[in-house]
Image 1 (cartoon, rainbow, N blue to C red):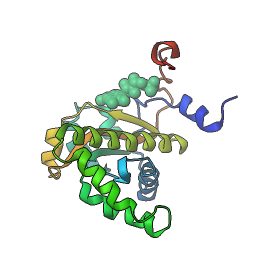
Image 2 (image 1 turned 135 degrees about the vertical axis):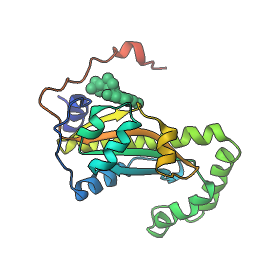
Image 3 (image 1 turned 180 degrees about the vertical axis):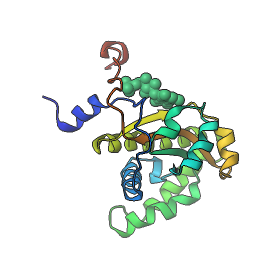
Length: 205
Ligand SMILES: Cc1cc2nc3c(=O)[nH]c(=O)nc-3n(C[C@H](O)[C@H](O)[C@H](O)COP(=O)(O)O)c2cc1C
């Protein structure tokens, strides 16, 4: 007997067909992104950005840079989920609220700042990997939040990241990692596709 959360995870499927002209309120968008930010990030850096593309005009424009996919204009909102290159100097600001709340001891800030500096400073590939990891965790958590609210979702790599970066005048450190469509699925969508057997992908050592 699966618990409700695992049942929901196993029933989620990627939405291909959205009911067009269905809006998602700003409070629902806030709720989704707020839930997404509960995902973990290294050193709690929260090195991500979520740009919610909601207006028809902005969605039409985005569609041009997203392989002309119907779902970009049909879904209620398209999140451009960005990872941000990790900045060790931000550890202080990101951890101070947890220190003040008594969740973390105060000496953690300097030790995690040093660790983050050693890990990322002068390591561009590792920094980029971390940005992609954080954005992916955020997107994945947002997908589950959307599913729990009865909404469909579609992660998308079919887009031109450089064009989006230029068009939206994103900062140099912002990496558009994924487009994530969220909206109301039509009834005739595919179910979750069949996964590889555990034997092929799980090794217990
Ligand atoms: C990183 C990533 C990129 C994807 N890009 C696209 C895309 O550009 N367009 C699209 O229609 N689906 C896209 N998909 C959806 C996949 O095709 C879908 O998740 C996969 O077939 C499994 O579907 P299921 O989860 O419903 O079983 C993408 C999924 C992921 C995880």
